[in-house]
Amino acid sequence: MTEPTNVDAGASLGALYLGGVRASTRAAGQRLVARNDDALRCADHFFAADRVPHRATGL
Image (cartoon, rainbow, N blue to C red; front, top):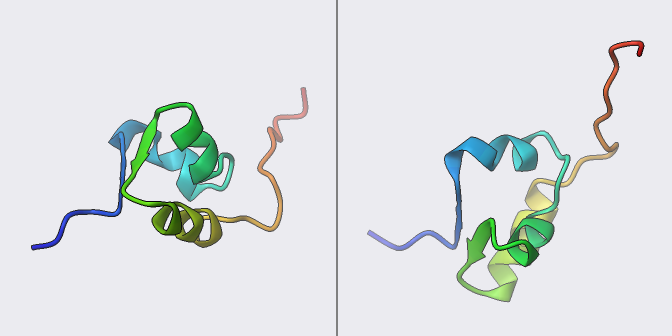
């Protein structure tokens, strides 16, 4: 079994999955541990969104 390339807290994975925060931003804030720079760049690309999510509640 190989070690994961990126490690993130499960509760905050939604921020990456929904495209609101880049993996490199989370790594800079010490919320994600990347094993190397290539893995971090790959995660940034993989979780990229065309549009930044926004609140659409009408407030």
